[in-house]
Length: 308
Length: 297
Image 1 (tube, rainbow over the protein chains, first blue to last red):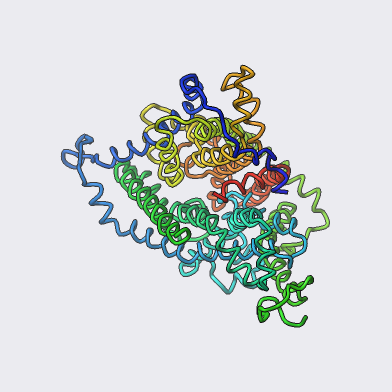
Image 2: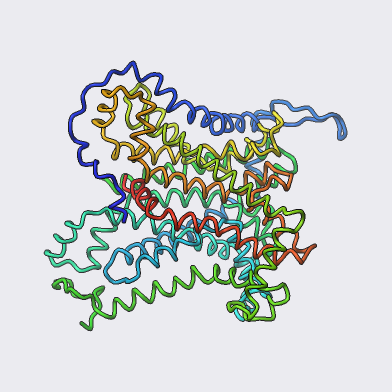
């Protein structure tokens, strides 16, 4: 199905293209690239710049009730960020979450993709859709749904939920991990599965002739070949983890164990509604920067491994 | 045939039929996880056919005898509650996500196509800047956007949520990869010789060849906007502008004071996921092809 939807013309790519006149394309280029670039600058570049600018401001008052004036505060906000133990606790919390949840989620996604790609499973189309269906459920809705499922009184599994406090302080982080896993396993499975489908079958035939078992084929051929897809899904999962907001914020109406600074983004939101825009901007800058650095480093490290 | 293929002493001959045991194990795993993925959605469907009182008094995963009439009376209650506000939310979401993804796909496709098919100075620089946007968490942008929009008086308006949602750096990435492999230079050259302008060539020739990628970009951006929570949460105060996620969130947060909302939250949650499931099912053969392109690179 994947294969048939690809245009057949791809093969002609190698043929030599005549030189094109460069100048005449100038206007077309502006039309093609201009709109995206304009909006990208307006809604990506400018906000980042503005957040950095805002994070260097601070509010000064004369006395307790004097008029407030906004002045340049240098690194005042960043000093406050580094002293905000709530914020760092939330960062550690999502890091712990990511270290446990991302490998489990991607491990399951890889397992399902390999099973779908193996001759062992019948009804592939059904399983593909069934596993992917939760991706169509927005985070807020998934959290509401699981909030009911976890609750001791309303859950269909109340025999379990009356004895295990899924929404208590000890477990609530992992209850959120379950929601995120439930939503995204199928999506990641599909990305990996698409990469598996793109592997030419001749490779398997060769391995078969060499007497390789299914296990060997999966471990030594398939997994290495889908590594780029795994890296892609891992990067998106890392970014998603650091951004956690909708699920914990929604679950707050089911659980008292989720504080207003449970995740970094919740801390940003809470700080912004105080309102303390400068400190919230500084939180945002630190968060964006660490996300960027973390996913960038991950990309570099894994690429060295995968392609060295 | 009694040994599973997993621990077969691997000198084996590739047998045509897989051993029964490993096939059973594989199907068992898939079966158990099918329950894991579908039971919550099933519960939501069943619960939306129950009255408030039946939540706790009837078996949670089984329809009651009067399921269908109850479903429609719940549905009627949901849509008429509080001046049809739920209908407004659904329409808002369709507008934010539908129009946003449509425009977003168009401009991302044009940009990705140009980056793939035209050699110009600074091309790689533009691409890298756009690509690094993929790594910037959208929620980190929500707060600064709010601060900027409040300077120009745009918060709590339709545009505050709509405009930032249009930009999809990942769409550009996907469009570039797909255009590079599926739109042959010769075809563009032929169109030029026929006197077709560059822009016209894009719309008549390139978009057709890029269709699977375009559908993929559209769908995933549609989902991203439909699911977006932080931006509307931070931008909007007026409930008549809410998308359905934020609306249901606001109902869910006030169940404490207003318990009758519980059944509306449940059936509303069910109604809100139906459009997405339909969109994915009906466009499946397009996006599964488009997804592959992004992951191979």
